[in-house]
Amino acid sequence: MSEEMQERASRPFQKNSTSLQIDWKRFGDDLRNVRAARGLTYRQFGALTGVTFSTLARLESSYLPCNAETFMTLAVEMGRDPLAYVIRSNASVSGVLVQETDAA
Image (cartoon, rainbow, N blue to C red; front, side, top):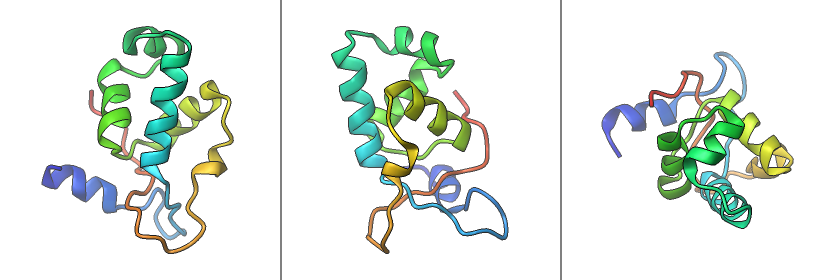
């Protein structure tokens, strides 16, 4: 993971608020499974959600964080409750929602 991505992943979603720890591995696995079950390519799923194919590929394979808008859009399209991915304990799964938009 590049230093810039590590820096982004370490920043909370909102300043002066509690950051939400997200299980990005679980999210990426679910995203891959839902997309594959529907028989859709990255580009086709991206057309449904407005998320670029490169962002989808990164989320599915690298488990890197994305911004809150992308996270919510994908969770809703998958038919999943976004809160299902929130880590409720201090587990050692890294990743927080980041504020910046995805650079694709």
